[in-house]
Length: 319
Image (cartoon, rainbow, N blue to C red; front, top):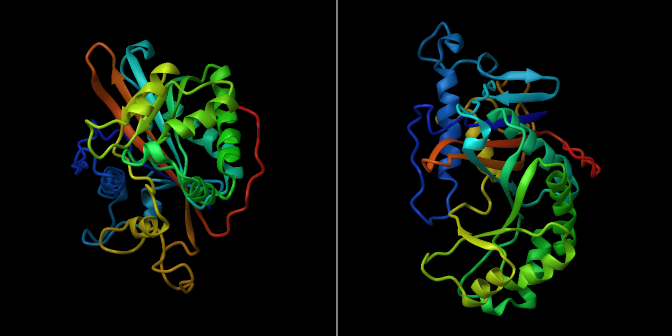
């Protein structure tokens, strides 16, 4: 079973969310936003149980369609003004441990959810975050062979080839007009130098995490300027949704949603869904009103697979 987790619009939902401090690599915004959205549906009158002190059965506030469970039930939050009034940015996190052969389908799923959520037909900028790719300002000038080997292992031992194949899916969506600009995350100048010659649509943005926001390595600044790449900073956690965090989020604990059983092989008489939980991908979307610079709509989707997960064959078709 596939579980689609959503935060809804965290800017206008009235959720009380603890946001991360600037430049602290953390997934606290994602986790707290999901918990807050789950709670808002659990406490809705339609999900209330006869015993006010008990947690509502998850079936009362989730929706199951075929082999997909929406957690909570999905209610899109369309943009309020005409599409041309917004800059819409999407960041797609491909998670560690997930074979790159699934990324084609995952990319189309993630983008399709965002388009439906905001009721739009295109995205201004999509930033791809590859697993195992990290940026360190102190080491940018000395990217060693050991670092490349580690990145390849983290990326299912496919390294650059896997990144290029994934990028080709994004290029096809760019050609169809679904995505206007493409970007990457955590790419050093040396990594960009290897990546750019292999792609048709070059990234216009490189989003990097810099512990000291005032220090950006000079080689990267020069390289980005020469290749017309805008450097942006971020504070996103690299492993944004680990399996253990996902199980805690959906499990029967005090802060859990009560959807999963206490352990994967729980007995038939124990409540909750059984089986291992495997996070697949996370996508973050932000819609900014251009003339005011105000974030009107921001949220996350995350998808996890429950039980045995069959590896999908790459599909080169677009949306």
